[in-house]
Amino acid sequence: MGRLGLYHNPGCSKSRGALEILHEHGAEFDVIEYLKQPLGRETLTRIAELLPGPPEELIRKDRNFEKLGLDPNGYKTLEAVIELLLEHPELMQRPLLVADDRALICRPSEKVLELL
Image 1 (cartoon, rainbow, N blue to C red):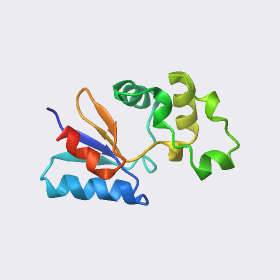
Image 2 (cartoon, rainbow, N blue to C red; image 1 turned 90 degrees about the vertical axis):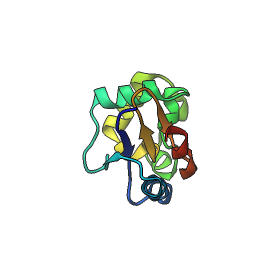
Image 3 (cartoon, one colour; image 1 turned 135 degrees about the vertical axis):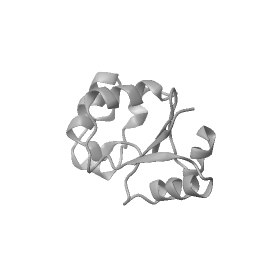
Image 4 (cartoon, rainbow, N blue to C red; image 1 turned 45 degrees about the vertical axis):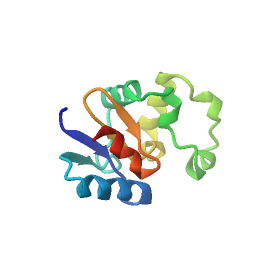
């Protein structure tokens, strides 16, 4: 397996928990603070395609989503999800762990163990 990538938001307790678990297990991984280094279309598409579920699972439908007045039914396709996350990266699910050919939304944080 190649090096893991953790798409991380330090303000998120689940993301901090995943980071801690990876450190505890001595995993080699890169931390990508996607709010500081916004992801491009190619990276977002690759991540969405590696997730086991539908692309819409990549979107956090939280208070920010509601504040923007967005309709969850409008974000079912890969293209709609990517467009939304390009404009609003804060709506991406986190933490997100990516290996060579798999990606997991690690909620709860312990899900990171599935890729170790």
